[in-house]
Length: 254
Image (tube, rainbow, N blue to C red):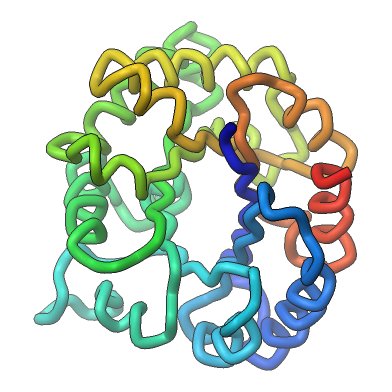
């Protein structure tokens, strides 16, 4: 049975001191969480050190929001995999729609980052995929999403796939207050799982974690998690307050 992965993406919020305060509340709040739920928080790069002091030795995984596919060199403003590992980073989010939109991360670039990350001992890499509102309205959702899956996982072996988490985030639902219905989300998640089976094997498809992201909150998490192919959530705004994030976690855990 697949575990449930609940990841908070804090985006460009909080100073390091503020982030450490929220992280401590979350760590304290999940000390006795069930083993089948994995809690993850993803602060800014500048907060990684202070937050790592809080998460070290806890059952909360520490993540980074992006990384370069190069380990060093003339890459102004970027951060390398080895730099992230210095802070005890357990996982990295790759291909988030905001990075694709604002930083120009193409499918090719995202794939390079995935392959680079697999060379390092991160526990997980979260590969984000999702369609725009225009693409959904033109009935291109599955074409777009499955193409992103194929391109993002290009040259990834089945053994390495065990460290990949897929996060379906419809772009039109991120930070908008809109969310896909549980049926819409399940349809895409099921299609993704079938695509993994076609690319790899039935076993790989059965075991891969597929999160949903896009205005997830305490009011819709139970409906989403009731679907067979939704294995957790990548949570933005609702993860910024410890009480809100813990409420979501507790809803799933009960």
